[in-house]
Length: 609
Image (cartoon, rainbow, N blue to C red; front, side):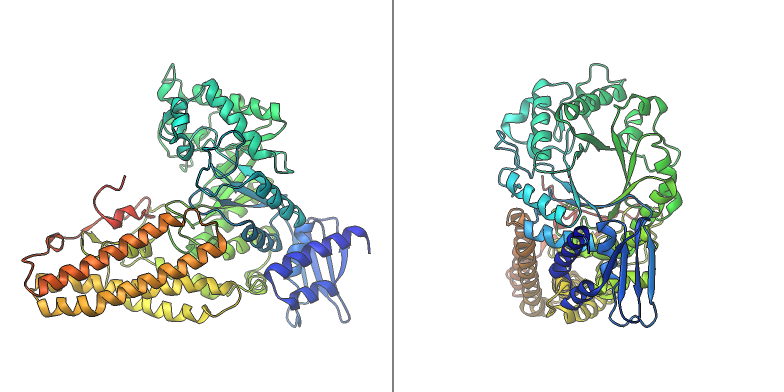
Protein backbone atom coordinates (compact mmCIF):
# COMPACT_ATOMS: atom_id res chain seq x y z
CA UNK A 1 0.00 0.00 0.00
CA UNK A 2 1.32 3.46 -0.87
CA UNK A 3 2.11 6.12 1.70
CA UNK A 4 -0.81 8.14 0.32
CA UNK A 5 -3.19 5.32 1.17
CA UNK A 6 -1.70 5.11 4.64
CA UNK A 7 -2.26 8.84 5.18
CA UNK A 8 -5.81 8.62 3.90
CA UNK A 9 -6.51 5.60 6.10
CA UNK A 10 -5.12 7.42 9.13
CA UNK A 11 -7.09 10.61 8.46
CA UNK A 12 -10.37 8.75 8.03
CA UNK A 13 -9.67 6.60 11.09
CA UNK A 14 -9.12 9.73 13.22
CA UNK A 15 -12.43 11.21 12.07
CA UNK A 16 -14.31 7.98 12.73
CA UNK A 17 -12.76 7.60 16.17
CA UNK A 18 -14.04 11.05 17.13
CA UNK A 19 -17.65 10.71 16.04
CA UNK A 20 -18.52 7.15 15.04
CA UNK A 21 -18.40 3.62 16.41
CA UNK A 22 -15.47 1.28 16.81
CA UNK A 23 -17.32 -1.10 14.51
CA UNK A 24 -17.25 1.50 11.75
CA UNK A 25 -13.52 2.00 12.39
CA UNK A 26 -12.98 -1.74 12.06
CA UNK A 27 -14.84 -1.86 8.76
CA UNK A 28 -12.74 0.97 7.42
CA UNK A 29 -9.48 -0.60 8.57
CA UNK A 30 -10.31 -3.88 6.84
CA UNK A 31 -11.29 -2.30 3.50
CA UNK A 32 -8.99 -2.47 0.48
CA UNK A 33 -8.21 1.00 -0.90
CA UNK A 34 -7.51 2.24 -4.42
CA UNK A 35 -7.57 5.55 -6.27
CA UNK A 36 -9.99 6.42 -9.07
CA UNK A 37 -9.81 9.14 -11.70
CA UNK A 38 -13.36 10.49 -11.33
CA UNK A 39 -14.38 12.75 -8.44
CA UNK A 40 -16.36 10.59 -6.04
CA UNK A 41 -16.05 7.09 -4.62
CA UNK A 42 -17.10 3.50 -5.02
CA UNK A 43 -17.73 0.83 -2.38
CA UNK A 44 -17.95 -2.79 -3.48
CA UNK A 45 -18.80 -5.47 -0.94
CA UNK A 46 -17.29 -8.65 -2.32
CA UNK A 47 -17.54 -12.16 -0.96
CA UNK A 48 -14.16 -11.98 0.78
CA UNK A 49 -13.32 -8.28 0.95
CA UNK A 50 -14.74 -4.77 0.80
CA UNK A 51 -13.07 -2.52 -1.75
CA UNK A 52 -13.11 1.27 -1.62
CA UNK A 53 -11.92 3.49 -4.42
CA UNK A 54 -11.81 7.26 -4.07
CA UNK A 55 -10.62 10.36 -5.87
CA UNK A 56 -9.79 12.73 -2.99
CA UNK A 57 -9.65 12.50 0.78
CA UNK A 58 -13.16 13.98 1.07
CA UNK A 59 -14.44 11.12 -1.10
CA UNK A 60 -12.66 8.53 1.03
CA UNK A 61 -14.25 10.10 4.11
CA UNK A 62 -17.76 9.79 2.69
CA UNK A 63 -17.04 6.24 1.51
CA UNK A 64 -16.20 5.29 5.10
CA UNK A 65 -19.78 6.05 6.16
CA UNK A 66 -21.07 3.83 3.36
CA UNK A 67 -19.43 0.69 4.74
CA UNK A 68 -21.94 -1.82 6.10
CA UNK A 69 -21.55 -4.94 8.18
CA UNK A 70 -24.03 -7.01 6.17
CA UNK A 71 -24.90 -5.23 2.92
CA UNK A 72 -27.77 -7.54 2.04
CA UNK A 73 -29.65 -5.08 -0.13
CA UNK A 74 -26.93 -2.78 -1.44
CA UNK A 75 -23.70 -4.53 -2.34
CA UNK A 76 -22.17 -1.70 -4.34
CA UNK A 77 -22.33 2.08 -4.20
CA UNK A 78 -20.91 4.27 -6.94
CA UNK A 79 -21.09 8.00 -6.20
CA UNK A 80 -19.95 10.77 -8.50
CA UNK A 81 -19.19 14.13 -6.87
CA UNK A 82 -20.52 16.94 -9.03
CA UNK A 83 -18.90 19.91 -7.27
CA UNK A 84 -15.25 20.72 -6.84
CA UNK A 85 -15.78 21.89 -3.27
CA UNK A 86 -18.39 21.22 -0.60
CA UNK A 87 -18.20 23.77 2.17
CA UNK A 88 -19.71 24.57 5.53
CA UNK A 89 -19.67 27.93 7.32
CA UNK A 90 -19.98 28.30 11.10
CA UNK A 91 -20.85 31.67 12.66
CA UNK A 92 -18.58 32.19 15.67
CA UNK A 93 -19.50 35.83 16.28
CA UNK A 94 -22.97 35.91 17.81
CA UNK A 95 -22.23 34.93 21.42
CA UNK A 96 -21.18 31.31 20.90
CA UNK A 97 -17.49 30.69 20.18
CA UNK A 98 -16.90 26.96 19.84
CA UNK A 99 -14.10 25.40 21.82
CA UNK A 100 -11.33 24.09 19.59
CA UNK A 101 -12.20 20.55 20.64
CA UNK A 102 -15.80 21.11 19.54
CA UNK A 103 -14.64 22.43 16.19
CA UNK A 104 -12.63 19.23 15.81
CA UNK A 105 -15.70 17.04 16.43
CA UNK A 106 -17.77 19.12 14.04
CA UNK A 107 -15.11 18.94 11.37
CA UNK A 108 -14.87 15.17 11.79
CA UNK A 109 -18.61 14.84 11.13
CA UNK A 110 -18.52 17.26 8.20
CA UNK A 111 -15.47 15.58 6.68
CA UNK A 112 -17.14 12.18 6.83
CA UNK A 113 -20.06 13.67 4.89
CA UNK A 114 -17.69 14.81 2.15
CA UNK A 115 -17.13 18.46 3.07
CA UNK A 116 -13.73 19.84 2.16
CA UNK A 117 -13.87 23.49 3.25
CA UNK A 118 -14.68 25.24 6.52
CA UNK A 119 -15.54 28.93 6.39
CA UNK A 120 -14.92 30.31 9.87
CA UNK A 121 -17.08 33.40 10.38
CA UNK A 122 -15.25 35.84 12.66
CA UNK A 123 -16.59 39.38 12.89
CA UNK A 124 -14.53 40.32 15.94
CA UNK A 125 -13.85 36.98 17.63
CA UNK A 126 -10.22 36.66 16.56
CA UNK A 127 -7.06 38.17 17.92
CA UNK A 128 -5.71 41.19 16.02
CA UNK A 129 -2.22 42.07 17.30
CA UNK A 130 -2.07 45.65 18.53
CA UNK A 131 -5.88 45.91 18.75
CA UNK A 132 -6.90 44.79 22.26
CA UNK A 133 -10.49 46.04 21.91
CA UNK A 134 -11.30 43.69 19.04
CA UNK A 135 -13.03 40.68 20.58
CA UNK A 136 -12.47 42.01 24.08
CA UNK A 137 -14.42 39.89 26.59
CA UNK A 138 -16.04 37.95 23.75
CA UNK A 139 -14.05 34.71 23.78
CA UNK A 140 -12.01 35.60 20.69
CA UNK A 141 -9.74 32.96 19.22
CA UNK A 142 -6.03 33.52 19.74
CA UNK A 143 -3.68 33.15 16.81
CA UNK A 144 -2.51 29.86 18.34
CA UNK A 145 -6.09 28.55 18.57
CA UNK A 146 -6.70 29.41 14.93
CA UNK A 147 -3.51 27.59 13.95
CA UNK A 148 -4.70 24.56 15.91
CA UNK A 149 -8.03 24.63 14.07
CA UNK A 150 -6.19 24.83 10.75
CA UNK A 151 -3.94 21.91 11.70
CA UNK A 152 -6.92 19.81 12.76
CA UNK A 153 -8.78 20.62 9.56
CA UNK A 154 -5.73 19.92 7.42
CA UNK A 155 -5.56 16.47 8.95
CA UNK A 156 -9.08 15.83 7.66
CA UNK A 157 -8.31 17.28 4.24
CA UNK A 158 -10.29 20.44 4.97
CA UNK A 159 -9.28 23.95 3.94
CA UNK A 160 -10.13 26.68 6.48
CA UNK A 161 -11.07 30.07 5.04
CA UNK A 162 -11.56 33.01 7.43
CA UNK A 163 -14.70 35.09 6.93
CA UNK A 164 -14.48 38.59 8.36
CA UNK A 165 -16.20 41.94 7.81
CA UNK A 166 -14.55 44.94 6.18
CA UNK A 167 -17.41 47.46 5.85
CA UNK A 168 -20.66 46.59 7.64
CA UNK A 169 -21.54 44.19 10.50
CA UNK A 170 -18.79 45.79 12.60
CA UNK A 171 -20.92 46.94 15.54
CA UNK A 172 -18.95 44.83 18.01
CA UNK A 173 -15.76 46.63 17.01
CA UNK A 174 -17.05 50.13 16.27
CA UNK A 175 -18.86 50.40 19.61
CA UNK A 176 -15.52 50.88 21.40
CA UNK A 177 -14.22 54.46 21.97
CA UNK A 178 -10.98 54.12 19.94
CA UNK A 179 -12.98 53.49 16.75
CA UNK A 180 -15.57 56.27 17.03
CA UNK A 181 -13.74 58.39 14.46
CA UNK A 182 -13.95 55.80 11.67
CA UNK A 183 -17.64 55.00 12.14
CA UNK A 184 -20.23 56.33 9.70
CA UNK A 185 -23.15 54.23 11.02
CA UNK A 186 -23.44 51.97 14.11
CA UNK A 187 -22.20 48.94 12.17
CA UNK A 188 -20.41 50.56 9.22
CA UNK A 189 -16.88 51.86 8.78
CA UNK A 190 -16.28 55.10 6.87
CA UNK A 191 -15.19 54.53 3.28
CA UNK A 192 -11.93 56.21 2.28
CA UNK A 193 -10.76 56.86 5.84
CA UNK A 194 -7.03 56.13 6.13
CA UNK A 195 -7.40 55.03 9.73
CA UNK A 196 -10.17 52.69 8.72
CA UNK A 197 -8.11 51.18 5.92
CA UNK A 198 -5.20 50.63 8.29
CA UNK A 199 -7.54 48.81 10.67
CA UNK A 200 -8.86 46.68 7.80
CA UNK A 201 -5.30 45.84 6.75
CA UNK A 202 -4.51 44.71 10.30
CA UNK A 203 -7.72 42.65 10.43
CA UNK A 204 -7.10 40.89 7.11
CA UNK A 205 -3.49 40.19 8.06
CA UNK A 206 -4.46 38.76 11.46
CA UNK A 207 -7.35 36.71 10.06
CA UNK A 208 -5.30 35.08 7.31
CA UNK A 209 -1.96 34.55 9.06
CA UNK A 210 -2.87 31.33 10.94
CA UNK A 211 -4.27 29.49 7.92
CA UNK A 212 -2.76 27.58 5.02
CA UNK A 213 -5.49 28.81 2.68
CA UNK A 214 -4.73 31.67 0.31
CA UNK A 215 -8.40 32.70 0.36
CA UNK A 216 -10.15 35.23 2.59
CA UNK A 217 -13.82 36.18 2.68
CA UNK A 218 -14.19 39.93 3.21
CA UNK A 219 -17.91 40.05 4.00
CA UNK A 220 -19.12 43.39 2.53
CA UNK A 221 -22.80 42.42 2.90
CA UNK A 222 -25.75 44.36 4.34
CA UNK A 223 -23.61 47.48 4.84
CA UNK A 224 -26.60 49.80 5.17
CA UNK A 225 -25.66 53.44 5.74
CA UNK A 226 -22.28 53.12 3.99
CA UNK A 227 -23.04 56.08 1.68
CA UNK A 228 -24.02 58.51 4.45
CA UNK A 229 -20.63 60.20 4.12
CA UNK A 230 -20.30 59.90 0.35
CA UNK A 231 -19.31 63.08 -1.53
CA UNK A 232 -21.99 62.30 -4.13
CA UNK A 233 -24.86 60.30 -2.57
CA UNK A 234 -26.35 59.74 -6.02
CA UNK A 235 -23.33 57.62 -6.99
CA UNK A 236 -23.87 54.97 -4.33
CA UNK A 237 -22.51 52.09 -6.42
CA UNK A 238 -19.40 54.02 -7.38
CA UNK A 239 -18.74 54.78 -3.72
CA UNK A 240 -19.25 51.14 -2.77
CA UNK A 241 -16.97 49.88 -5.57
CA UNK A 242 -14.24 52.29 -4.45
CA UNK A 243 -14.19 50.49 -1.12
CA UNK A 244 -14.16 47.07 -2.77
CA UNK A 245 -11.14 48.21 -4.79
CA UNK A 246 -9.37 49.51 -1.68
CA UNK A 247 -9.89 46.29 0.25
CA UNK A 248 -8.97 44.10 -2.74
CA UNK A 249 -5.75 46.11 -3.08
CA UNK A 250 -4.89 45.29 0.53
CA UNK A 251 -5.46 41.60 -0.25
CA UNK A 252 -3.06 41.84 -3.21
CA UNK A 253 -0.44 43.41 -0.96
CA UNK A 254 -0.86 40.58 1.53
CA UNK A 255 -0.89 37.88 -1.16
CA UNK A 256 -4.41 36.56 -0.44
CA UNK A 257 -7.38 35.97 -2.74
CA UNK A 258 -10.52 37.97 -1.87
CA UNK A 259 -14.14 36.81 -1.77
CA UNK A 260 -17.28 38.81 -0.93
CA UNK A 261 -21.02 38.33 -0.45
CA UNK A 262 -22.83 39.60 -3.55
CA UNK A 263 -26.10 41.02 -2.15
CA UNK A 264 -24.98 44.66 -2.21
CA UNK A 265 -24.13 44.39 -5.90
CA UNK A 266 -27.80 43.69 -6.59
CA UNK A 267 -29.26 46.22 -4.17
CA UNK A 268 -26.99 49.27 -3.80
CA UNK A 269 -28.35 51.16 -6.78
CA UNK A 270 -31.93 50.50 -5.70
CA UNK A 271 -31.37 51.55 -2.09
CA UNK A 272 -33.37 48.62 -0.69
CA UNK A 273 -32.75 44.95 0.06
CA UNK A 274 -34.69 42.99 -2.51
CA UNK A 275 -32.11 40.95 -4.39
CA UNK A 276 -34.12 37.71 -4.19
CA UNK A 277 -36.27 38.98 -7.05
CA UNK A 278 -35.35 37.07 -10.18
CA UNK A 279 -35.72 40.24 -12.26
CA UNK A 280 -33.15 42.11 -10.16
CA UNK A 281 -29.70 41.53 -11.60
CA UNK A 282 -26.18 42.88 -11.22
CA UNK A 283 -25.52 45.57 -13.79
CA UNK A 284 -22.97 44.63 -16.44
CA UNK A 285 -20.93 47.76 -15.69
CA UNK A 286 -20.81 46.76 -12.02
CA UNK A 287 -19.50 43.27 -12.83
CA UNK A 288 -16.94 44.81 -15.20
CA UNK A 289 -15.77 47.25 -12.52
CA UNK A 290 -15.05 44.63 -9.87
CA UNK A 291 -11.35 43.94 -9.23
CA UNK A 292 -9.71 41.02 -10.98
CA UNK A 293 -9.44 37.85 -8.92
CA UNK A 294 -12.49 38.55 -6.77
CA UNK A 295 -14.89 35.64 -6.08
CA UNK A 296 -18.56 36.40 -5.41
CA UNK A 297 -20.66 34.44 -2.91
CA UNK A 298 -24.41 34.45 -3.46
CA UNK A 299 -26.23 33.88 -0.17
CA UNK A 300 -29.86 32.82 -0.17
CA UNK A 301 -31.35 30.56 2.48
CA UNK A 302 -35.05 30.48 1.74
CA UNK A 303 -35.81 29.09 -1.70
CA UNK A 304 -36.62 25.48 -2.46
CA UNK A 305 -35.89 24.76 -6.12
CA UNK A 306 -32.68 24.07 -8.03
CA UNK A 307 -33.89 26.23 -10.90
CA UNK A 308 -34.30 29.35 -8.76
CA UNK A 309 -30.76 29.15 -7.37
CA UNK A 310 -29.32 28.34 -10.78
CA UNK A 311 -30.99 31.41 -12.28
CA UNK A 312 -29.60 33.72 -9.59
CA UNK A 313 -26.13 32.20 -9.84
CA UNK A 314 -26.03 32.77 -13.60
CA UNK A 315 -26.60 36.46 -12.93
CA UNK A 316 -23.06 36.60 -11.50
CA UNK A 317 -21.36 35.43 -14.69
CA UNK A 318 -18.59 35.66 -15.79
CA UNK A 319 -17.13 36.13 -12.29
CA UNK A 320 -16.28 33.02 -10.24
CA UNK A 321 -19.14 32.40 -7.85
CA UNK A 322 -19.92 30.27 -4.79
CA UNK A 323 -23.48 29.28 -3.82
CA UNK A 324 -24.23 29.78 -0.11
CA UNK A 325 -27.35 28.07 1.18
CA UNK A 326 -28.32 28.05 4.83
CA UNK A 327 -29.58 25.92 7.69
CA UNK A 328 -32.35 27.66 9.65
CA UNK A 329 -30.38 27.72 12.90
CA UNK A 330 -30.77 31.40 13.77
CA UNK A 331 -33.44 32.71 16.12
CA UNK A 332 -34.39 29.34 17.57
CA UNK A 333 -33.16 26.58 19.90
CA UNK A 334 -33.09 23.76 17.34
CA UNK A 335 -32.56 23.93 13.61
CA UNK A 336 -35.75 23.93 11.57
CA UNK A 337 -34.78 20.78 9.66
CA UNK A 338 -37.61 20.17 7.17
CA UNK A 339 -37.12 23.56 5.49
CA UNK A 340 -33.34 23.42 5.94
CA UNK A 341 -33.03 20.04 4.23
CA UNK A 342 -35.13 21.25 1.31
CA UNK A 343 -33.38 24.61 0.94
CA UNK A 344 -29.85 23.25 1.34
CA UNK A 345 -30.28 20.41 -1.12
CA UNK A 346 -31.83 22.83 -3.60
CA UNK A 347 -28.88 25.20 -3.15
CA UNK A 348 -26.47 22.39 -3.99
CA UNK A 349 -28.61 21.33 -6.93
CA UNK A 350 -28.71 24.91 -8.18
CA UNK A 351 -24.92 25.16 -7.97
CA UNK A 352 -24.57 21.99 -10.03
CA UNK A 353 -27.11 23.19 -12.59
CA UNK A 354 -25.37 26.58 -12.91
CA UNK A 355 -21.96 24.97 -13.33
CA UNK A 356 -20.31 26.69 -10.37
CA UNK A 357 -17.47 24.95 -8.55
CA UNK A 358 -18.55 25.27 -4.95
CA UNK A 359 -21.59 25.17 -2.69
CA UNK A 360 -21.47 26.34 0.90
CA UNK A 361 -23.96 25.60 3.69
CA UNK A 362 -24.05 28.33 6.31
CA UNK A 363 -25.06 28.24 9.97
CA UNK A 364 -25.87 31.56 11.61
CA UNK A 365 -26.42 32.42 15.26
CA UNK A 366 -28.45 35.63 15.00
CA UNK A 367 -30.28 36.77 18.14
CA UNK A 368 -28.08 35.21 20.77
CA UNK A 369 -27.04 31.92 19.22
CA UNK A 370 -29.43 29.90 21.34
CA UNK A 371 -29.30 27.04 18.84
CA UNK A 372 -27.12 23.94 18.94
CA UNK A 373 -25.24 23.96 15.62
CA UNK A 374 -24.95 20.18 15.70
CA UNK A 375 -28.70 20.11 15.06
CA UNK A 376 -27.82 21.12 11.47
CA UNK A 377 -26.09 17.78 10.78
CA UNK A 378 -29.06 16.15 8.97
CA UNK A 379 -29.35 19.13 6.62
CA UNK A 380 -25.59 19.05 5.98
CA UNK A 381 -25.81 15.34 5.22
CA UNK A 382 -28.65 15.71 2.74
CA UNK A 383 -26.94 18.63 1.02
CA UNK A 384 -23.65 16.75 0.69
CA UNK A 385 -25.31 13.61 -0.60
CA UNK A 386 -27.10 15.70 -3.21
CA UNK A 387 -23.66 16.59 -4.54
CA UNK A 388 -22.75 12.87 -4.61
CA UNK A 389 -26.05 11.78 -6.12
CA UNK A 390 -26.73 9.49 -3.16
CA UNK A 391 -30.20 8.38 -2.10
CA UNK A 392 -32.11 9.38 1.02
CA UNK A 393 -31.59 5.80 2.22
CA UNK A 394 -27.83 6.28 2.05
CA UNK A 395 -28.10 9.62 3.84
CA UNK A 396 -30.07 8.05 6.65
CA UNK A 397 -27.54 5.23 6.94
CA UNK A 398 -24.67 7.72 6.98
CA UNK A 399 -26.26 9.74 9.76
CA UNK A 400 -26.87 6.53 11.71
CA UNK A 401 -23.17 5.78 11.40
CA UNK A 402 -22.56 9.13 13.11
CA UNK A 403 -24.97 8.22 15.91
CA UNK A 404 -27.68 10.60 14.69
CA UNK A 405 -31.27 9.32 14.85
CA UNK A 406 -32.55 11.37 11.93
CA UNK A 407 -36.22 10.72 12.65
CA UNK A 408 -35.90 12.10 16.19
CA UNK A 409 -33.77 15.06 15.13
CA UNK A 410 -36.31 16.07 12.51
CA UNK A 411 -39.12 15.49 14.99
CA UNK A 412 -37.46 17.95 17.38
CA UNK A 413 -38.10 20.63 14.73
CA UNK A 414 -41.81 20.26 15.50
CA UNK A 415 -41.32 22.72 18.36
CA UNK A 416 -41.54 25.35 15.63
CA UNK A 417 -44.59 24.00 13.83
CA UNK A 418 -46.98 26.98 13.66
CA UNK A 419 -49.40 27.13 16.57
CA UNK A 420 -52.35 28.06 14.38
CA UNK A 421 -53.48 27.80 10.77
CA UNK A 422 -52.54 31.35 9.78
CA UNK A 423 -51.78 31.52 6.07
CA UNK A 424 -48.05 32.19 5.75
CA UNK A 425 -48.01 32.23 1.97
CA UNK A 426 -45.19 34.55 0.99
CA UNK A 427 -43.29 34.12 4.25
CA UNK A 428 -39.55 34.23 3.73
CA UNK A 429 -38.22 32.55 6.86
CA UNK A 430 -39.61 29.57 8.75
CA UNK A 431 -41.34 30.71 11.96
CA UNK A 432 -39.91 30.18 15.44
CA UNK A 433 -43.00 29.98 17.70
CA UNK A 434 -41.23 27.93 20.36
CA UNK A 435 -39.08 30.99 20.99
CA UNK A 436 -42.14 33.26 21.02
CA UNK A 437 -43.72 31.08 23.69
CA UNK A 438 -40.58 30.58 25.77
CA UNK A 439 -39.89 34.29 26.23
CA UNK A 440 -43.49 35.57 26.16
CA UNK A 441 -43.97 37.59 29.33
CA UNK A 442 -46.24 35.54 31.62
CA UNK A 443 -47.85 38.55 33.30
CA UNK A 444 -48.13 41.13 30.51
CA UNK A 445 -50.33 39.09 28.20
CA UNK A 446 -49.90 41.48 25.28
CA UNK A 447 -49.06 38.95 22.56
CA UNK A 448 -51.50 36.65 20.79
CA UNK A 449 -49.57 33.75 19.26
CA UNK A 450 -52.29 31.18 18.63
CA UNK A 451 -52.03 29.09 21.81
CA UNK A 452 -54.50 26.28 22.44
CA UNK A 453 -54.86 23.09 24.45
CA UNK A 454 -53.58 21.28 21.36
CA UNK A 455 -50.29 23.18 21.60
CA UNK A 456 -49.81 22.15 25.21
CA UNK A 457 -50.62 18.52 24.42
CA UNK A 458 -48.30 18.51 21.42
CA UNK A 459 -45.39 19.90 23.46
CA UNK A 460 -45.88 17.39 26.27
CA UNK A 461 -46.02 14.46 23.82
CA UNK A 462 -42.96 15.63 21.90
CA UNK A 463 -41.04 16.15 25.13
CA UNK A 464 -41.83 12.60 26.25
CA UNK A 465 -40.72 11.24 22.89
CA UNK A 466 -37.44 13.15 22.87
CA UNK A 467 -36.69 12.30 26.49
CA UNK A 468 -35.88 8.77 25.35
CA UNK A 469 -32.63 10.18 23.94
CA UNK A 470 -31.55 12.02 27.11
CA UNK A 471 -29.58 9.04 28.42
CA UNK A 472 -27.79 8.47 25.11
CA UNK A 473 -24.01 8.61 25.19
CA UNK A 474 -23.85 9.81 21.58
CA UNK A 475 -25.12 12.82 19.61
CA UNK A 476 -28.77 11.98 20.37
CA UNK A 477 -28.11 13.20 23.90
CA UNK A 478 -28.29 16.74 22.48
CA UNK A 479 -32.05 16.25 22.22
CA UNK A 480 -32.20 16.46 26.02
CA UNK A 481 -32.23 20.26 25.88
CA UNK A 482 -35.20 20.20 23.52
CA UNK A 483 -36.99 17.63 25.67
CA UNK A 484 -36.64 20.03 28.61
CA UNK A 485 -37.79 22.90 26.39
CA UNK A 486 -40.94 20.96 25.45
CA UNK A 487 -41.78 20.39 29.12
CA UNK A 488 -41.41 24.10 29.85
CA UNK A 489 -43.43 25.11 26.79
CA UNK A 490 -46.25 22.68 27.56
CA UNK A 491 -46.63 24.03 31.08
CA UNK A 492 -46.20 27.63 29.99
CA UNK A 493 -48.96 27.17 27.42
CA UNK A 494 -51.27 25.93 30.17
CA UNK A 495 -50.39 28.97 32.26
CA UNK A 496 -51.04 31.51 29.49
CA UNK A 497 -54.36 29.84 28.62
CA UNK A 498 -55.59 29.85 32.21
CA UNK A 499 -54.17 33.03 33.72
CA UNK A 500 -56.01 35.96 32.12
CA UNK A 501 -59.38 34.16 31.83
CA UNK A 502 -59.30 33.38 35.56
CA UNK A 503 -58.51 37.00 36.33
CA UNK A 504 -61.18 38.42 34.03
CA UNK A 505 -63.73 36.03 35.54
CA UNK A 506 -62.84 37.24 39.02
CA UNK A 507 -62.03 33.67 40.01
CA UNK A 508 -59.67 34.30 42.91
CA UNK A 509 -59.64 30.64 43.93
CA UNK A 510 -58.46 29.57 40.49
CA UNK A 511 -55.83 32.32 40.57
CA UNK A 512 -54.59 31.05 43.93
CA UNK A 513 -54.27 27.53 42.52
CA UNK A 514 -52.32 28.84 39.56
CA UNK A 515 -49.99 30.73 41.88
CA UNK A 516 -49.35 27.83 44.22
CA UNK A 517 -49.38 24.92 41.77
CA UNK A 518 -48.90 25.70 38.07
CA UNK A 519 -46.58 28.72 38.27
CA UNK A 520 -44.08 26.85 40.50
CA UNK A 521 -44.18 23.97 38.01
CA UNK A 522 -43.33 26.36 35.20
CA UNK A 523 -40.53 27.90 37.28
CA UNK A 524 -39.06 24.47 37.94
CA UNK A 525 -39.29 23.50 34.27
CA UNK A 526 -37.63 26.74 33.14
CA UNK A 527 -34.86 26.34 35.72
CA UNK A 528 -34.20 22.79 34.52
CA UNK A 529 -34.17 23.99 30.91
CA UNK A 530 -31.66 26.69 31.79
CA UNK A 531 -29.41 24.14 33.50
CA UNK A 532 -29.59 21.72 30.56
CA UNK A 533 -28.95 24.55 28.10
CA UNK A 534 -26.02 25.82 30.18
CA UNK A 535 -24.46 22.35 30.41
CA UNK A 536 -24.73 21.95 26.64
CA UNK A 537 -23.32 25.42 26.02
CA UNK A 538 -20.30 24.97 28.27
CA UNK A 539 -19.56 21.54 26.82
CA UNK A 540 -19.46 22.99 23.30
CA UNK A 541 -18.51 26.65 23.65
CA UNK A 542 -16.36 29.03 25.59
CA UNK A 543 -18.15 30.58 28.56
CA UNK A 544 -18.29 34.00 26.91
CA UNK A 545 -21.74 34.76 25.52
CA UNK A 546 -23.63 32.52 27.92
CA UNK A 547 -24.26 35.60 30.08
CA UNK A 548 -26.59 36.88 27.34
CA UNK A 549 -28.81 33.80 27.55
CA UNK A 550 -28.48 33.63 31.33
CA UNK A 551 -29.97 37.11 31.55
CA UNK A 552 -32.89 35.97 29.41
CA UNK A 553 -33.58 33.00 31.65
CA UNK A 554 -33.10 35.10 34.78
CA UNK A 555 -35.52 37.67 33.42
CA UNK A 556 -38.13 35.03 32.65
CA UNK A 557 -37.77 33.45 36.10
CA UNK A 558 -38.07 36.88 37.73
CA UNK A 559 -41.26 37.56 35.78
CA UNK A 560 -42.67 34.18 36.80
CA UNK A 561 -41.91 35.04 40.43
CA UNK A 562 -43.71 38.36 39.96
CA UNK A 563 -46.65 36.50 38.44
CA UNK A 564 -46.84 34.23 41.45
CA UNK A 565 -46.70 37.12 43.92
CA UNK A 566 -49.30 39.27 42.16
CA UNK A 567 -51.73 36.38 41.78
CA UNK A 568 -51.46 35.59 45.47
CA UNK A 569 -51.92 39.24 46.44
CA UNK A 570 -54.95 39.57 44.18
CA UNK A 571 -56.47 36.25 45.26
CA UNK A 572 -56.17 37.28 48.92
CA UNK A 573 -57.78 40.65 48.30
CA UNK A 574 -54.64 42.69 48.88
CA UNK A 575 -54.57 43.91 45.28
CA UNK A 576 -57.58 45.48 43.58
CA UNK A 577 -56.48 44.75 40.04
CA UNK A 578 -53.56 43.39 38.06
CA UNK A 579 -52.95 46.16 35.56
CA UNK A 580 -50.92 44.07 33.11
CA UNK A 581 -53.76 41.53 32.74
CA UNK A 582 -56.17 44.27 31.73
CA UNK A 583 -54.44 44.52 28.34
CA UNK A 584 -56.17 42.85 25.40
CA UNK A 585 -53.63 40.66 23.60
CA UNK A 586 -52.88 41.52 19.97
CA UNK A 587 -51.17 39.56 17.23
CA UNK A 588 -47.57 40.79 17.29
CA UNK A 589 -45.80 38.28 15.03
CA UNK A 590 -45.99 38.90 11.30
CA UNK A 591 -47.96 36.51 9.13
CA UNK A 592 -45.81 37.07 6.09
CA UNK A 593 -42.31 38.18 5.13
CA UNK A 594 -39.87 37.32 7.95
CA UNK A 595 -41.40 35.07 10.59
CA UNK A 596 -38.24 34.46 12.62
CA UNK A 597 -38.95 36.87 15.46
CA UNK A 598 -36.28 37.99 17.99
CA UNK A 599 -36.68 37.43 21.71
CA UNK A 600 -37.23 41.11 22.49
CA UNK A 601 -40.61 41.06 20.72
CA UNK A 602 -42.06 38.68 23.30
CA UNK A 603 -39.99 39.47 26.37
CA UNK A 604 -41.78 42.82 26.67
CA UNK A 605 -43.63 45.37 24.55
CA UNK A 606 -41.24 47.99 25.92
CA UNK A 607 -38.01 48.89 24.14
CA UNK A 608 -35.00 46.76 25.07
CA UNK A 609 -32.31 48.96 23.49
